[in-house]
Structures are given as structure tokens and as C-alpha cells.
Length: 168
Image (cartoon, rainbow, N blue to C red; front, top):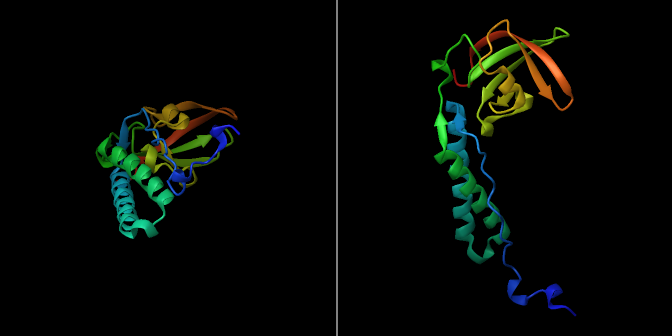
């Protein structure tokens, strides 16, 4: 039998090595709430890592590997974070942190807030500032019509309101 298919008994119980989680190439702008969320995530993962290390041989080595990988990822996200206070941003055009109300061609109104990548939650109306919709909206003013290029096809929306958003 080929040795390539024989499990080495010394490897039993060793956690699989995981590749690091890839970092976004974009600047890591965050709202004040996003910065708080990142700090909380790093603290939570640090506590989980400490508990797993304290458990020693009784701990789950695979879980420890996952927690350490995620901790390294979020520590890097936090180190790269650039806080932006939406309350101090212009209110006459769409910028990072702004809450924008748009109306589609059918007259349906939707509200979005442009936030950092780690803060995005589409179901809650929080969209990443680098998403296709946010990119279409950036620098638009009330009354502007923007073209949102989506996989489902092009959609035109009109900016009908802009206000200070996340954290402001």
C-alpha cells in the first residue's frame, strides 16, 4: 500500500493547521459602533483562547486552532481600523456612515446606512461602504438618481434623504 494513504499515529489528536483568514484589501473604516464591536470580538476571542489554554489536555485542540485563527484575524482588523464619526461628516451628500433613504422606480422607499465591512448586516439596512450599492450611492446628493449594478440586473434608485447615520 502506498504510504501516502496511511495515517501516521503521531498525527492523531493534532489539530489541522488552518490558513489565516484573508484580510480585505480595502481601508478598514469603522463607525464608533463598529470599533466597539471589533474590540468586543477581540476580547471575547481572547477569553475563549485563555479558557481553552487553561483546560490543557482536556481542551478541544481543534476549537483552540479556530479561536486562535479568528483572534489573529480580528486583532489585525482592529489594528487596521480607522474610526470615522458619522456625526462629523457632510450631510449634503452620501458619505461613509450616512443613512440614506432611496426610492426605487416602483416608488418603494428603503433606508441604508453605509458602514464598515465588519459591521454590515444587509437585513438590518447596514451595507458595507465597498458594496456595489454603497459605491453607487457614494457622493450622491438628494435628488440624484444612481444606477445600482446587481447580479439580478440594473436598478435605478433616487436619493430622497440623507442624515447622519451609525453612531450619530
